[in-house]
Length: 271
Image (cartoon, rainbow, N blue to C red; front, side, top):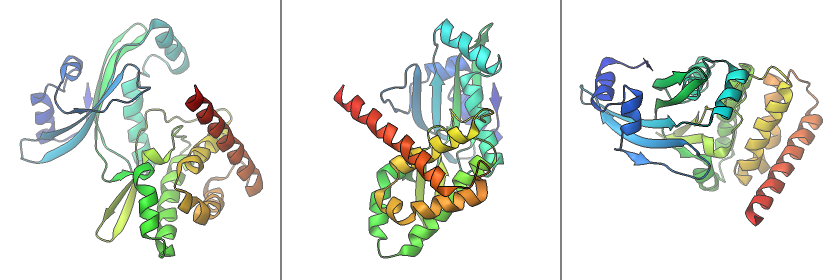
């Protein structure tokens, strides 16, 4: 078990039985957040009150057992240490070191055997706000007569994405659903969530950057895309585009990927 939190919160985690793998998988309080495609994973939203009386909004993600073939493939691909919970924990730490605004990794635990992780869990803090996939259209409609808001948003999104990419990382799920908007005191902040699949591509890094940017273009609100996408990509290239700065080439590669995503979604809806 590895935890990186202060003693009051650690006391609350212990009291809830979340300091062991057995306790984490037996935990039945909180709100389960089920959705299609999770497989052996479960997600729970919970609030713990620590010994100093402070409330902590947390998420518990449990990685249940998977078959031996998948575990063997992971062992060859990533090495014995690279369990799913550990990988997500280390991804969060790496993203925060790179300056990406995201959740805090509170702790993780695993059960292992010769093939690596049998099952594991991770606890993270909640980020403030709501996903751009839910709030984005309303946000830009509300500020339609304030171009400075769209400009400020573009700057914050650019900082978030560039911090990730300049550190050599690709998100692999960089959709609007994973960009959270928090409005407060007349301003706003952005945060990035769901870092479980983040990695540092050694081969064909441009391919993974195109995938990240295409996911953004595919999912972000149309108001922002019409007004700000070209400027966003141009400024991204100025900061990150070591793979070549031909903006037309990047536009074409991203648009091909977006078209493939649309075809895939249409096919899935028909099936």
